[in-house]
Image 1 (cartoon, chains in turn purple, orange):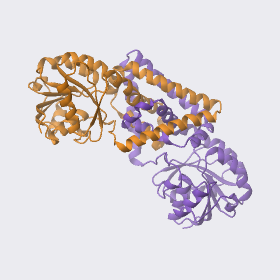
Image 2: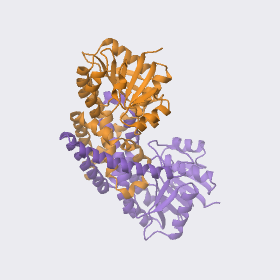
Image 3: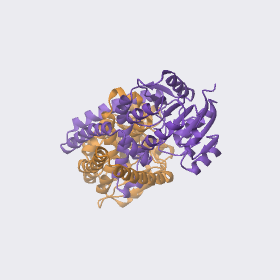
Length: 287
Length: 287
C-alpha cells in the first residue's frame, strides 16, 4: 500500500537512510530521493539501494508529498526556510530530531503539514553504511503534535511509523524534552564525562561495566552538542538532580555511612529491575 | 593435571560457584567442597554439580590445600581469623574481592600462603544459579602480591587462573584500588545514581542508552556498599574528577558554549574508540 508518491530524505545518514530503506522494503512510496551535502554519501546510499536518486541540491525535493528532515538540530533550523519555499503546501514534513520544543515551534510556522517525530532508535554509529530497514522494528516513536498540527497529516505519519515497525506515542514537545533530558540526554552527557574521566593508561583494563556505561560516548559530537544546546534548561535540571545524588554517595563514603549507600543502591536496583520488565515487553532500539 | 587435592570454596555464589565449576571442568582438584551460610545455596550448588559436598560449617574446610574466599568484603574480614585457625600453614588461600588494599593487609597477616586476586568478570546477576564454568574465559584476573607473598603460591595461583581461561596481570594492592576506583567503582556508583535520578513515570520509555548505562545498577547493594567502604578515598577522588567534568558540561550548556561541549564530547569519543580497539582484542567479562 503506497502512502506517498515521492518521498524526499534530507540527510541520508543512519536514521534518514534507515527510514528510506524501510519505506522501500514495505513498498510505501513511488520513489525515494535523497539529499545530502556530501556526494560520497549519496553514491553510497544509491549503491546500497537506500534511495532511487540523490542530489546535493535541495531543489530535487520539489513535488515530494513527504519530506523527512534527518540532519542535526541546528542544521535543520537553517534549512527549514529554504525547504518551505520549495515544497508545496500539501507536502507532509517530519523531522526526527532528539529535541522538539525549539524545532516544532519553528517548523509549525514554516510548514502547513508538519509533524514532529522522534524515533527512539539509532546507535552510537552514524552514516548510511549502518542504515537498516529493520532499525525501527519493535521500537518506540514519539510524536509531538500541537494545536496547529493537521489531523490528517498526523494520521498518515502515525501510519508510516507503524508500517515500518514502531509503536507510537503522542506527547507535547515540552513534555518530550523534559522526559528525554532524563532518559537520553543525561545518560549521554554522563557517558561522555565518565569516559573523559578515566585516565588513558587504565583504558585497556576496562571491564564490561565501564564498556556498557560508555558505549554512547562514541556518539557523534556535533549531533550531541546540538541536542544539548536545543534543550539546555531541561538538561541542566537533570544534571543537577543527578549531582545531588552523587554528592550524597560521596558524603556517605567519606563518613562511612553504609546504611545510606545501601539504601540508594537498593532503590536503584529495584528501579533497574522494573526497567528490565519493560525491556522484556519491548525490545528497545539502540539509542 | 591436578593442582590441588581438596579445594574449599567459601561463598558459593556467582564467582565462587564459577571457579568451582571451572576447576571441575578442567579437572584441577581431587574434590571441591562448598561452604555457605544458606542451606538452599548448598543444595542448589550440589544439584548443579558445582561442588562435591557442601556444609554450613567452616570446619569442613579442614585439610583443604586451596581455599577460595568469595564473600563480600566486610564479611571476608570477619571470617579470616576463624579460617586461619582451621586451615594448615601450607594451604594456599585466595580471595576474589573487588578491593584489595584493606583485605590484603589483613590476610597477609592471617595466612602464610595468601595471594590476593580480582577476576574482572562477573555480572549484575548473583547467586550460584548464574555460575558458569566459562565465566573467566578470555577475561583478565588481577593478582596483587606483596613482599610477604610466597613465590611458589603465587605461581600456583597464576597457573590456576590461566587454566580456567583468564589472563593475569600483577600490580600492588594500592595500584589496584586506585585503578579500580576509576574503571569499575565509579561506573557502578554512577549507574546507581543515574537510575535513581530517573523519575519512575519515565522508566517505561527507557531507550538503549539508559538501559546500557544502568545495567549494573541491578547489582547487589550489600556487595557494592562493601566495595565503596573498603576503598573510600580512591572512590571519592574518582567521583570528584567526574564531578568537575560534569560541571563544565553544565556550565557550557548554560552559557551556550557549543565549542566546549564539542571538545569534551570529541575527546570522549576518541577515548571510547580506543577502548573498542582493546575490546576487540579481548572479549571482556561482564563486570
